[in-house]
Amino acid sequence: MPDRPLRLLIVGAHPDDADYAAGGTAALYRAHGHVVRMVSLTNGDAGHHERPGPELAKRRLAEATAAGAIIGADYELFDNHDGELLPTLENRAQVIRLIRSFDPDLVLTHRPNDYHPDHRYTSQLVQDAAYMVTVPAVVPGVRHLAKNPVIAYLPDNFQKPCPLEPAIAVDVSPVLDKIVSMLCCHVSQFFEWLPFNFGVLHEVPAGEAQRRGWLQELLCARLRQQAERFRKLLLRQYGGERGSRIEYAEAFEGCEYGSPLDAAARKRLFEFVPYAER
Ligand SMILES: [Zn+2]
Image (tube, rainbow, N blue to C red; front, side):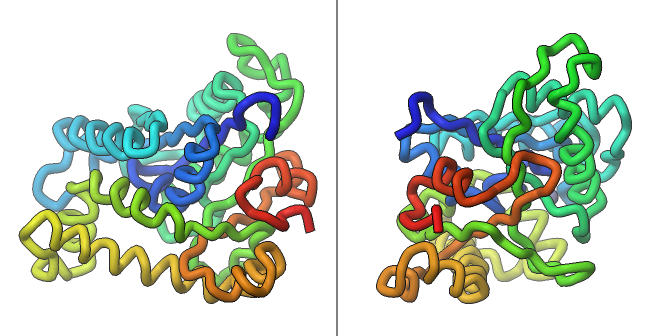
C-alpha cells in the first residue's frame, strides 16, 4: 500500500462523462480507500430536448452529486455553458487551478479527437494545463506542483487518426453494480435526453427497476466490447485464467504530456490490477 491514499481526478466535459467512461475504475479506487474527484468542465445546461437552461444545470448538479455519493466521491461542475466550451486562456487557468489544488496522482480525460467539441476542448485544456501546473509563474495564485501527475485518456471507439492504444486495462466486473447505480442517477440523460437524441425514447421502460435493467444491458454491451477489444492486454495483466474470463473492462491510454504511465506508474496507480507491472 502507498503511504497516503492515491488521488484520482477524472475531468470530463459533461456531468456524466467521468462515471460513464471510468466509473468502474473510480469505484475500485474508492474500494481501496483512495480519493476520487469527478469534474465536469461544463454545467450540462444544453443536455435536454425539453428543458435546457439554468434549471437543467441545477438538476444535473443534483444528479452528479448523487452519482458521486454512490462511491463516496466529490462531483464538481464548472459553470461553463454546455456546448460552448473553448480552450481559452481563462479556462486553461481554471484547469490549472483544479489540478494544482487537488494534487492528483492520476488524471483521466477525453482523447483529443472525439465527436463532441466539448470533449475535444476538455482534452485540449487538460493537455494545455499538463506541463503548466509545474510552472510557478503561470497562475501564480495557486502553488505549482513539484511533479507533473500521470495523465491518461478515457476509452472510446474512435478510429481516426488512431484508435485507443491502452497502457492498462482494468477488470471492472466486481463493481458493475456501482457503475449502474451511478449512471442511474443521471435520469435527465440516460432515461430522457440520450434516448431522445438516439431516437429510442419509446424503448425506455416506465418502472424504476425495469429502466435500471435496460440501462445495465446497454452498459454491459459496451464494457463487454471493451473487454473483447483489449483481451490481449487483460491476459497479460491478469494471467490466462482470470484474463480470459473477464467480462467487463475499462482501458486507458497514457498521455505523453503528463508523467509517463510506465510499468512503475501502472503498478503504483492500479494496485487492483495484479500484474500491472509487467
Ligand atoms: Zn460528454
